[in-house]
Length: 346
Ligand SMILES: Nc1nc2c(ncn2[C@@H]2O[C@H](COP(=O)(O)OP(=O)(O)OP(=O)(O)O)[C@@H](O)[C@H]2O)c(=O)[nH]1
Ligand SMILES: [Mg+2]
Image 1 (cartoon, rainbow, N blue to C red):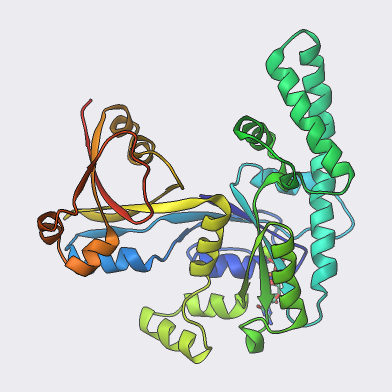
Image 2 (tube, rainbow, N blue to C red; image 1 turned 180 degrees about the vertical axis):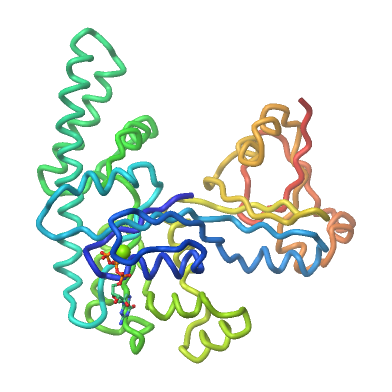
Protein backbone atom coordinates (compact mmCIF):
# COMPACT_ATOMS: atom_id res chain seq x y z
CA UNK A 1 0.00 0.00 0.00
CA UNK A 2 1.35 3.40 -0.92
CA UNK A 3 0.19 6.83 0.17
CA UNK A 4 1.21 10.34 -0.77
CA UNK A 5 1.45 13.10 1.84
CA UNK A 6 0.16 16.33 0.42
CA UNK A 7 -0.77 19.76 1.74
CA UNK A 8 0.03 23.44 1.58
CA UNK A 9 3.45 24.77 2.50
CA UNK A 10 4.78 24.38 6.02
CA UNK A 11 1.83 22.42 7.41
CA UNK A 12 3.97 19.62 8.85
CA UNK A 13 4.12 17.05 6.02
CA UNK A 14 7.81 16.27 6.37
CA UNK A 15 7.52 16.20 10.15
CA UNK A 16 4.74 13.61 9.83
CA UNK A 17 6.84 11.68 7.30
CA UNK A 18 9.80 11.46 9.69
CA UNK A 19 7.46 10.23 12.43
CA UNK A 20 5.86 7.56 10.21
CA UNK A 21 9.18 6.29 8.90
CA UNK A 22 10.80 6.55 12.36
CA UNK A 23 13.60 8.75 10.99
CA UNK A 24 14.85 5.92 8.78
CA UNK A 25 15.17 8.22 5.74
CA UNK A 26 17.34 11.31 5.87
CA UNK A 27 15.18 14.18 4.73
CA UNK A 28 15.91 17.73 3.84
CA UNK A 29 13.31 19.97 5.36
CA UNK A 30 12.06 22.41 2.75
CA UNK A 31 13.60 20.42 -0.11
CA UNK A 32 11.88 20.37 -3.51
CA UNK A 33 12.48 16.64 -3.89
CA UNK A 34 9.98 14.07 -2.63
CA UNK A 35 11.00 11.89 0.31
CA UNK A 36 10.15 8.21 0.04
CA UNK A 37 10.13 5.79 2.95
CA UNK A 38 8.56 2.70 4.44
CA UNK A 39 6.48 2.67 7.60
CA UNK A 40 5.92 -0.65 9.35
CA UNK A 41 2.27 -0.89 10.39
CA UNK A 42 1.90 -1.70 14.08
CA UNK A 43 -0.57 -4.53 14.56
CA UNK A 44 -1.51 -5.66 18.08
CA UNK A 45 -2.82 -9.00 16.75
CA UNK A 46 0.48 -9.73 15.04
CA UNK A 47 2.39 -9.09 18.26
CA UNK A 48 -0.05 -11.26 20.19
CA UNK A 49 0.32 -14.20 17.79
CA UNK A 50 3.99 -14.43 18.78
CA UNK A 51 2.96 -14.99 22.39
CA UNK A 52 1.53 -18.35 21.27
CA UNK A 53 3.66 -19.27 18.27
CA UNK A 54 7.41 -19.14 18.76
CA UNK A 55 9.02 -17.72 15.67
CA UNK A 56 12.33 -16.37 14.39
CA UNK A 57 10.99 -13.34 12.60
CA UNK A 58 7.96 -11.05 12.75
CA UNK A 59 7.10 -9.21 9.56
CA UNK A 60 4.47 -6.48 9.77
CA UNK A 61 2.56 -5.11 6.80
CA UNK A 62 4.11 -1.91 5.52
CA UNK A 63 2.99 1.39 4.16
CA UNK A 64 5.09 3.21 1.57
CA UNK A 65 4.90 6.95 2.15
CA UNK A 66 5.87 9.71 -0.24
CA UNK A 67 6.30 13.18 1.22
CA UNK A 68 5.88 15.96 -1.31
CA UNK A 69 7.10 19.53 -1.26
CA UNK A 70 4.35 21.92 -0.17
CA UNK A 71 1.89 23.33 -2.63
CA UNK A 72 2.12 27.10 -2.84
CA UNK A 73 -1.42 28.43 -2.82
CA UNK A 74 -2.35 30.11 -6.08
CA UNK A 75 -1.07 27.65 -8.63
CA UNK A 76 2.43 27.31 -10.19
CA UNK A 77 3.26 23.98 -11.70
CA UNK A 78 1.51 21.57 -9.38
CA UNK A 79 1.46 18.75 -11.91
CA UNK A 80 5.25 18.52 -11.87
CA UNK A 81 5.10 18.00 -8.11
CA UNK A 82 2.18 15.57 -8.26
CA UNK A 83 3.92 13.44 -10.91
CA UNK A 84 5.70 11.71 -8.02
CA UNK A 85 2.46 10.43 -6.53
CA UNK A 86 0.24 9.74 -9.55
CA UNK A 87 0.42 6.02 -8.75
CA UNK A 88 -0.24 6.01 -5.01
CA UNK A 89 -3.31 4.22 -3.64
CA UNK A 90 -4.41 7.01 -1.30
CA UNK A 91 -3.65 10.57 -0.29
CA UNK A 92 -2.99 11.97 3.18
CA UNK A 93 -3.74 15.67 3.25
CA UNK A 94 -2.04 17.36 6.19
CA UNK A 95 -4.01 20.34 7.47
CA UNK A 96 -2.40 22.88 9.75
CA UNK A 97 -4.31 23.12 13.03
CA UNK A 98 -1.53 24.63 15.15
CA UNK A 99 -0.43 28.25 15.65
CA UNK A 100 -2.02 30.69 13.24
CA UNK A 101 -4.21 28.59 10.99
CA UNK A 102 -7.36 28.40 8.94
CA UNK A 103 -8.23 24.78 8.32
CA UNK A 104 -11.35 25.47 6.27
CA UNK A 105 -9.62 27.79 3.85
CA UNK A 106 -6.54 25.53 3.59
CA UNK A 107 -8.59 22.45 2.74
CA UNK A 108 -10.59 24.41 0.20
CA UNK A 109 -7.50 25.72 -1.54
CA UNK A 110 -5.68 22.38 -1.51
CA UNK A 111 -8.70 20.52 -2.85
CA UNK A 112 -9.24 23.10 -5.57
CA UNK A 113 -5.55 22.92 -6.56
CA UNK A 114 -6.05 19.17 -7.05
CA UNK A 115 -9.15 19.75 -9.14
CA UNK A 116 -7.30 22.21 -11.37
CA UNK A 117 -4.33 19.85 -11.69
CA UNK A 118 -6.67 17.02 -12.74
CA UNK A 119 -8.39 19.27 -15.27
CA UNK A 120 -5.07 19.88 -17.01
CA UNK A 121 -4.42 16.13 -17.20
CA UNK A 122 -7.97 15.26 -18.24
CA UNK A 123 -8.21 17.84 -21.03
CA UNK A 124 -4.98 16.61 -22.60
CA UNK A 125 -6.03 12.99 -22.18
CA UNK A 126 -9.46 13.52 -23.76
CA UNK A 127 -7.87 15.12 -26.84
CA UNK A 128 -5.45 12.27 -27.24
CA UNK A 129 -7.93 9.46 -26.62
CA UNK A 130 -10.50 11.10 -28.92
CA UNK A 131 -8.05 11.04 -31.80
CA UNK A 132 -7.51 7.30 -31.29
CA UNK A 133 -11.23 6.67 -30.77
CA UNK A 134 -12.01 8.32 -34.14
CA UNK A 135 -10.40 5.36 -35.88
CA UNK A 136 -12.93 3.04 -34.24
CA UNK A 137 -10.87 2.00 -31.23
CA UNK A 138 -13.52 0.87 -28.69
CA UNK A 139 -11.11 0.86 -25.76
CA UNK A 140 -10.12 4.46 -26.51
CA UNK A 141 -13.81 5.41 -26.72
CA UNK A 142 -14.36 3.96 -23.25
CA UNK A 143 -11.51 6.13 -21.95
CA UNK A 144 -13.02 9.19 -23.61
CA UNK A 145 -16.36 8.45 -21.93
CA UNK A 146 -14.84 8.06 -18.47
CA UNK A 147 -12.63 11.13 -18.85
CA UNK A 148 -15.57 13.19 -20.07
CA UNK A 149 -17.53 12.24 -16.97
CA UNK A 150 -14.54 13.16 -14.81
CA UNK A 151 -14.29 16.49 -16.59
CA UNK A 152 -17.98 17.26 -15.95
CA UNK A 153 -17.44 16.75 -12.20
CA UNK A 154 -14.26 18.82 -12.15
CA UNK A 155 -16.00 21.65 -13.96
CA UNK A 156 -18.54 21.71 -11.15
CA UNK A 157 -15.53 21.96 -8.81
CA UNK A 158 -16.21 18.48 -7.49
CA UNK A 159 -13.52 15.84 -6.95
CA UNK A 160 -13.94 12.87 -9.26
CA UNK A 161 -14.28 10.51 -6.28
CA UNK A 162 -17.85 11.81 -6.04
CA UNK A 163 -18.75 10.00 -9.26
CA UNK A 164 -20.01 6.44 -9.46
CA UNK A 165 -17.40 4.23 -11.05
CA UNK A 166 -17.27 0.54 -11.74
CA UNK A 167 -14.08 -1.48 -11.59
CA UNK A 168 -13.09 -0.87 -15.20
CA UNK A 169 -13.72 2.89 -14.82
CA UNK A 170 -11.52 2.89 -11.74
CA UNK A 171 -8.71 1.19 -13.62
CA UNK A 172 -8.86 3.99 -16.18
CA UNK A 173 -8.85 6.69 -13.47
CA UNK A 174 -5.86 5.02 -11.86
CA UNK A 175 -4.00 4.71 -15.16
CA UNK A 176 -4.25 8.45 -15.70
CA UNK A 177 -3.31 9.11 -12.07
CA UNK A 178 -6.41 11.21 -11.47
CA UNK A 179 -5.65 12.71 -8.06
CA UNK A 180 -9.19 13.63 -7.03
CA UNK A 181 -10.33 10.05 -7.54
CA UNK A 182 -7.98 8.74 -4.87
CA UNK A 183 -9.29 8.06 -1.36
CA UNK A 184 -8.37 10.97 0.93
CA UNK A 185 -7.34 10.86 4.56
CA UNK A 186 -7.38 14.30 6.20
CA UNK A 187 -4.75 14.67 8.90
CA UNK A 188 -5.42 17.46 11.40
CA UNK A 189 -1.94 18.46 12.55
CA UNK A 190 -2.49 19.91 16.00
CA UNK A 191 -0.24 21.59 18.54
CA UNK A 192 1.41 19.87 21.51
CA UNK A 193 -1.20 21.21 23.91
CA UNK A 194 -4.13 19.92 21.86
CA UNK A 195 -3.23 16.31 21.08
CA UNK A 196 -6.88 15.25 21.09
CA UNK A 197 -7.90 17.94 18.61
CA UNK A 198 -10.32 20.04 20.63
CA UNK A 199 -9.85 23.28 18.70
CA UNK A 200 -12.40 24.48 16.18
CA UNK A 201 -9.89 23.83 13.36
CA UNK A 202 -9.28 20.20 14.28
CA UNK A 203 -13.02 19.69 14.69
CA UNK A 204 -13.60 21.22 11.28
CA UNK A 205 -11.20 18.74 9.65
CA UNK A 206 -13.08 15.83 11.22
CA UNK A 207 -16.45 17.17 10.13
CA UNK A 208 -15.27 18.00 6.63
CA UNK A 209 -13.84 14.50 6.11
CA UNK A 210 -17.09 12.93 7.28
CA UNK A 211 -19.18 15.03 4.95
CA UNK A 212 -16.93 14.39 1.98
CA UNK A 213 -16.53 10.64 2.06
CA UNK A 214 -13.03 10.78 3.53
CA UNK A 215 -11.49 9.72 6.80
CA UNK A 216 -9.67 11.89 9.32
CA UNK A 217 -7.23 11.54 12.16
CA UNK A 218 -5.70 13.99 14.62
CA UNK A 219 -1.94 14.00 15.14
CA UNK A 220 0.67 16.30 16.59
CA UNK A 221 3.41 15.72 14.04
CA UNK A 222 6.24 17.32 16.03
CA UNK A 223 5.42 15.24 19.07
CA UNK A 224 5.05 12.07 16.97
CA UNK A 225 8.40 12.76 15.37
CA UNK A 226 10.03 13.08 18.81
CA UNK A 227 8.32 9.92 20.03
CA UNK A 228 9.53 7.99 16.99
CA UNK A 229 13.12 8.72 18.00
CA UNK A 230 12.79 7.12 21.42
CA UNK A 231 13.42 3.55 22.55
CA UNK A 232 10.28 1.39 22.90
CA UNK A 233 9.96 1.76 26.68
CA UNK A 234 10.48 5.51 26.62
CA UNK A 235 7.95 5.74 23.79
CA UNK A 236 5.30 4.13 25.95
CA UNK A 237 6.03 6.48 28.81
CA UNK A 238 5.97 9.58 26.63
CA UNK A 239 2.73 8.55 24.91
CA UNK A 240 1.11 7.91 28.26
CA UNK A 241 2.23 11.24 29.67
CA UNK A 242 0.69 12.96 26.65
CA UNK A 243 -2.57 11.06 27.03
CA UNK A 244 -2.05 9.04 23.84
CA UNK A 245 -2.49 5.29 23.57
CA UNK A 246 -0.28 4.59 20.55
CA UNK A 247 1.90 6.30 17.91
CA UNK A 248 0.01 7.98 15.05
CA UNK A 249 0.98 5.39 12.45
CA UNK A 250 -1.56 3.01 14.06
CA UNK A 251 -4.69 5.14 13.57
CA UNK A 252 -3.32 6.41 10.25
CA UNK A 253 -2.90 2.90 8.85
CA UNK A 254 -6.30 1.82 10.16
CA UNK A 255 -7.98 4.83 8.55
CA UNK A 256 -6.25 4.03 5.25
CA UNK A 257 -7.35 0.38 5.52
CA UNK A 258 -10.93 1.57 5.96
CA UNK A 259 -10.69 3.95 3.01
CA UNK A 260 -9.13 1.32 0.78
CA UNK A 261 -11.38 -1.51 2.02
CA UNK A 262 -8.51 -3.69 3.17
CA UNK A 263 -8.42 -6.52 5.66
CA UNK A 264 -5.53 -8.58 7.04
CA UNK A 265 -4.67 -12.25 7.12
CA UNK A 266 -1.67 -13.88 8.77
CA UNK A 267 0.78 -16.63 8.10
CA UNK A 268 2.39 -18.04 11.19
CA UNK A 269 5.17 -20.59 11.54
CA UNK A 270 8.55 -21.23 13.18
CA UNK A 271 10.40 -19.24 10.53
CA UNK A 272 8.17 -16.17 10.44
CA UNK A 273 4.90 -14.67 11.52
CA UNK A 274 3.63 -12.20 8.98
CA UNK A 275 0.70 -9.86 8.30
CA UNK A 276 -0.70 -9.59 4.76
CA UNK A 277 -3.12 -6.88 3.65
CA UNK A 278 -5.75 -7.91 1.08
CA UNK A 279 -8.93 -6.37 -0.30
CA UNK A 280 -11.96 -7.21 1.87
CA UNK A 281 -13.91 -10.11 0.46
CA UNK A 282 -10.98 -11.49 -1.53
CA UNK A 283 -11.28 -15.20 -2.38
CA UNK A 284 -8.62 -17.54 -0.98
CA UNK A 285 -6.61 -17.94 -4.23
CA UNK A 286 -6.29 -14.15 -4.59
CA UNK A 287 -4.98 -13.93 -1.02
CA UNK A 288 -2.52 -16.70 -1.84
CA UNK A 289 -1.37 -14.66 -4.83
CA UNK A 290 -0.36 -11.81 -2.55
CA UNK A 291 2.27 -14.16 -1.09
CA UNK A 292 3.37 -15.62 -4.42
CA UNK A 293 1.78 -16.04 -7.84
CA UNK A 294 2.76 -19.75 -7.81
CA UNK A 295 0.63 -20.35 -4.73
CA UNK A 296 -2.34 -18.77 -6.49
CA UNK A 297 -1.72 -20.74 -9.68
CA UNK A 298 -1.30 -24.08 -7.93
CA UNK A 299 -3.85 -23.41 -5.18
CA UNK A 300 -5.26 -26.60 -3.65
CA UNK A 301 -6.80 -25.45 -0.39
CA UNK A 302 -6.34 -23.16 2.58
CA UNK A 303 -6.02 -24.52 6.09
CA UNK A 304 -7.06 -21.75 8.39
CA UNK A 305 -8.32 -20.66 11.76
CA UNK A 306 -9.14 -17.32 13.32
CA UNK A 307 -6.57 -15.40 15.42
CA UNK A 308 -9.24 -15.11 18.10
CA UNK A 309 -9.30 -18.92 18.41
CA UNK A 310 -5.55 -18.87 18.89
CA UNK A 311 -5.89 -16.24 21.59
CA UNK A 312 -8.52 -18.23 23.50
CA UNK A 313 -7.24 -21.78 22.88
CA UNK A 314 -3.51 -20.91 23.03
CA UNK A 315 -2.14 -23.40 20.50
CA UNK A 316 -2.71 -24.77 17.01
CA UNK A 317 -2.97 -28.22 18.54
CA UNK A 318 -5.85 -27.13 20.79
CA UNK A 319 -7.52 -25.41 17.82
CA UNK A 320 -7.35 -28.64 15.86
CA UNK A 321 -8.72 -30.68 18.77
CA UNK A 322 -11.59 -28.23 19.16
CA UNK A 323 -12.42 -28.78 15.49
CA UNK A 324 -11.69 -25.16 14.63
CA UNK A 325 -9.03 -25.78 12.04
CA UNK A 326 -10.89 -25.33 8.76
CA UNK A 327 -10.04 -26.61 5.33
CA UNK A 328 -11.27 -24.12 2.74
CA UNK A 329 -11.46 -24.39 -1.03
CA UNK A 330 -10.98 -21.90 -3.82
CA UNK A 331 -14.37 -20.25 -3.35
CA UNK A 332 -13.68 -19.35 0.26
CA UNK A 333 -13.93 -15.63 1.09
CA UNK A 334 -11.06 -14.65 3.35
CA UNK A 335 -12.07 -13.31 6.75
CA UNK A 336 -10.20 -10.56 8.57
CA UNK A 337 -7.86 -12.19 11.07
CA UNK A 338 -7.57 -15.60 9.41
CA UNK A 339 -4.31 -17.42 10.09
CA UNK A 340 -3.63 -19.43 6.95
CA UNK A 341 -1.49 -22.18 5.55
CA UNK A 342 -1.96 -22.49 1.79
CA UNK A 343 -1.50 -25.90 0.21
CA UNK A 344 -0.49 -25.68 -3.42
CA UNK A 345 1.05 -27.67 -6.23
CA UNK A 346 2.92 -26.28 -9.23
N1 LIG B 1 3.59 23.37 16.93
C1 LIG B 1 3.70 22.51 15.94
N2 LIG B 1 4.54 22.79 14.93
C2 LIG B 1 4.65 21.91 13.93
C3 LIG B 1 3.89 20.71 13.89
N3 LIG B 1 4.19 20.04 12.77
C4 LIG B 1 5.10 20.78 12.12
N4 LIG B 1 5.39 21.92 12.81
C5 LIG B 1 6.36 22.95 12.44
O1 LIG B 1 6.00 23.49 11.19
C6 LIG B 1 7.16 23.77 10.42
C7 LIG B 1 7.05 23.13 9.06
O2 LIG B 1 7.10 21.73 9.20
P1 LIG B 1 7.42 20.77 7.98
O3 LIG B 1 7.22 19.39 8.46
O4 LIG B 1 8.73 21.08 7.37
O5 LIG B 1 6.26 21.19 6.99
P2 LIG B 1 6.08 20.77 5.47
O6 LIG B 1 4.61 20.70 5.26
O7 LIG B 1 6.88 19.58 5.16
O8 LIG B 1 6.68 22.05 4.75
P3 LIG B 1 7.06 22.19 3.18
O9 LIG B 1 7.61 20.90 2.73
O10 LIG B 1 8.03 23.30 3.16
O11 LIG B 1 5.79 22.55 2.52
C8 LIG B 1 8.34 23.27 11.21
O12 LIG B 1 8.94 24.37 11.87
C9 LIG B 1 7.72 22.32 12.20
O13 LIG B 1 8.46 22.23 13.40
C10 LIG B 1 3.02 20.45 14.98
O14 LIG B 1 2.35 19.40 15.05
N5 LIG B 1 2.95 21.37 15.97
MG1 LIG C 1 8.27 19.24 3.60
